[in-house]
Image 1 (cartoon, helix red, strand yellow):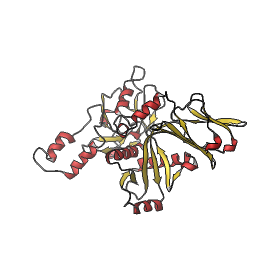
Image 2 (cartoon, helix red, strand yellow):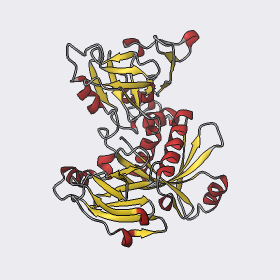
Image 3 (cartoon, rainbow, N blue to C red):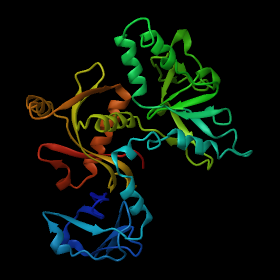
Image 4 (spheres, one colour):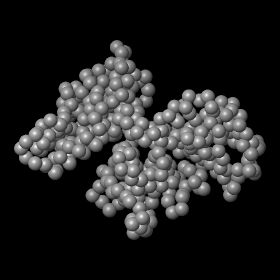
Length: 379
């Protein structure tokens, strides 16, 4: 059975906050290992338990078990290693602007260009985007001529606004003039335009087939439907979770969790409007949760899988209808924004929140009437 724990790096305080759920009377010692990378829980006549830290602490740092124990769990803070380059870079890079830049998100244009640079004679037919279902190569990077970032995550939304509002007709500021100058935004042949959670591309340039009878695009190998939508310029926009990414190391192909779509929307709203409360809806449904984005830019480890979760949103959320209704009745004190997502993105978000919450020590699972979870940008 996995021991519930979590460790959260607080870069501004240069400490790691740790909580472990374990009976203190069974522990003989609690300290960091010689590298400062793990907390080691020692027990009589049993194997040690190791808890990975998000950043290195001081080596062999001892914790007084009695002084940090309370009601079946231990909560304490560790100093970070003063010479750790990760600690220094994290302290400099945890501003909101740096966390919402187009190079920050998973599978950014910068990251994909780096993958493309790994192409060699030995792997030229293997690097690129694979079908997430059958793992056949759909977008070989050897065929990709150019990879560009979407100018702004709000750019397409701004063009949708112009499309809907349609300002004056005729003249230099008319809808037609603005549309002609800025609205006709299309990828070049064999090129990718990369957004936070999607790719804009010409499907005919790669191994992507139009579906039968004008249906969705599909994989030509397994005929799995590929999700896509049209933006305001009639470009095909494919969510990244349609694909797996295989790099030059030819390791297991990496997947893109659909919850990163809600993640990017929440971060963009925090950055642009300072809104921290959200009514998150499943599209065309009454299903919803209320989300409070309490903090961002955190590196965390927990019992979820022991890996370091980077650039986390610390989320407080409510999923019970009574709690959601009570929150909305008190909106005169709280400003919130309503956002909605399609099934894949909503389900992935809710699944990650519930798994994260259940992996925390019971003492850390709730804050007043809110459930607590962490939403990582990458692992």
